[in-house]
Image 1 (cartoon, rainbow, N blue to C red):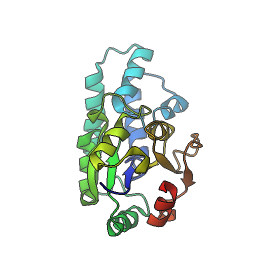
Image 2 (cartoon, rainbow, N blue to C red):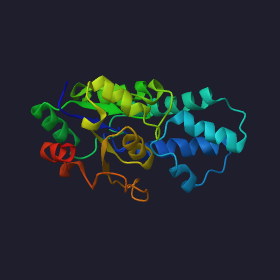
Image 3 (tube, helix red, strand yellow):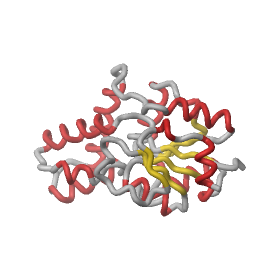
Length: 220
């Protein structure tokens, strides 16, 4: 059993993708003719696509089926990923992953995005080999802020939840990790600045601030 494990959210932590998601969803809202405000849209940062579209369908009484809406968003995103450089790695990520490898600390991904999208994002950016395993939003019954995705990932890491450190950038993700009994580092970025990240064990402004010594200090 590994001594520790580090679990990464993907969007806004591994890759700077929130802008892409926001643009795709905003275009879909316009196409569907639903008046979703920016404030309402922000409530779903870190949540699974299905839970967001279920909320929108119920509130705006849309005829479109949830499966169609989820698949349409994924299709648009996958098309975006085919464009070189469309979604870039967060600064300092590769250096942190290399440091974790040298220190023997496994890294895993727990993201509300689908497994298909996670795999493509990691492979397009040539970082899949750094991660022991991944868990997507379609791998668990309840999405963030429920703890399911983090408990499932801890099991894959063969590490007790209280020996896992999560790196997140959303209220939903932080709440989910805390509910799973894990310590959380909040990464403050241009999309998380207006969110309440106070439940995190520590807030950082860039991944460059994080190293394996700090990870061990937080977990011990």
